[in-house]
Amino acid sequence: EHALARVSLVDWNNAVLLDTHVRVSESTPVTDYRTFVSGVREEHLQPDVAMESEKCIAIVTKLLQGRILVGHGLKNDLTVLGITHPWYNTRDTAKYEPFMKKAKKVTDSLSTSTLPRSRKLKDLALTKLHRVIQK
Image: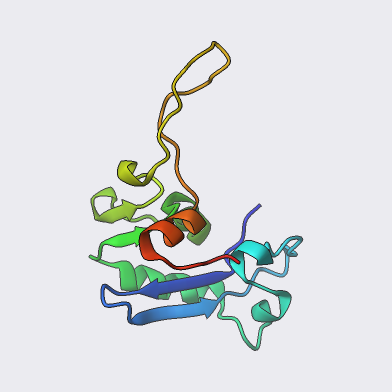
């Protein structure tokens, strides 16, 4: 099971609209913070530091209203948030074909797919933005 731990939203000019850690339900204890990817540690999710999830979801919903949402792997993020966003206002870099890995040529019957595959956000940030993330 996945839980919402952090939400970051910026506008077109890279101004921060929201950047907060989110409290995880006490009924669902965290077993893996995936700190190497997320940067989230146990102390970030303490009640005195993190925002209540319901409040965060309400803010995100309001901020996204009528806006174009750009991100990577947005289906997962929106599912964890429990919200939807119109497909026509969504730009997902994980599904943008020019950013995807090219399919390998099928040379034997063991190959399973010739479709392009999504690249990792870490790789896209380095090649497209010249920024190192998820160290």
